[in-house]
Length: 216
Image (tube, rainbow, N blue to C red; front, side):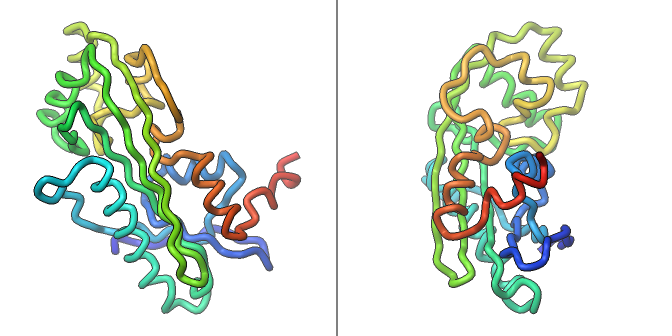
């Protein structure tokens, strides 16, 4: 477990734990009016297993992150009845799973594969309820990049905007200018498909829209 932090929670509302350190996932939830009570990012090995496909990898990692966060939450008095929400995003070209780029060489290899081609982005969302039931949804989005010029390629690498991003890019950042076609959920590519996440929470009794009037 990397760290935990608390976020304000109005009294009486069910509590939600986000098992992620991603500011993008937190921002997407907040965009939907959903404010986690706590952040419990899970440190899990994200290396694909032998012959593991992108869909199975995303599902396994999202489930693992939720399980790690649950173990921590259930021994805390303030989180023992909390909902646990996690997600994992995988980018794949053909059958090749792209890494979460940390080094410029990794990002460059990703860009070469993505340039002028279509790829798929999978995000698996996992919800563990206060009664420890597990609910999961897997979402696929298809994205096509333009063919990158040498100048675009070099300047994007120099920007550092790719660092820590699955597939070596963030669609909500500079690389959004590379996308010529997207079929499916945009928020899925950012890192959390909002429709599916909200539907999972709503279906299990979490008050997704309880704060909407506060924003009016």
